[in-house]
Length: 58
Image (cartoon, rainbow, N blue to C red; front, side, top):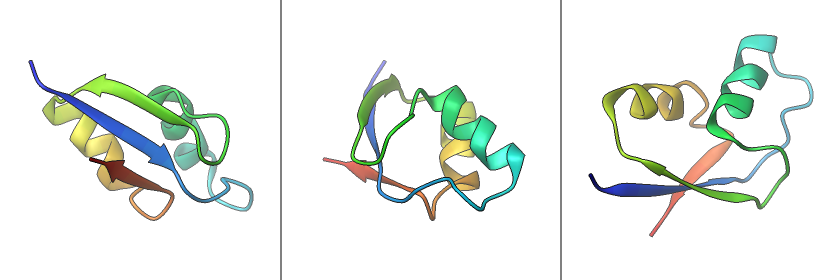
């Protein structure tokens, strides 16, 4: 399958616990950290949930 690179652009401090756990599930722990994951519908849903904290890297 295709892969997608996700970068955390904003801190998770001050956001609800479910959004913090979503970032951890994506594998993101620090600002400017980039992870590469398989592009699946469930991953897209997680990205949509924290879209204000992450960006897609080309």
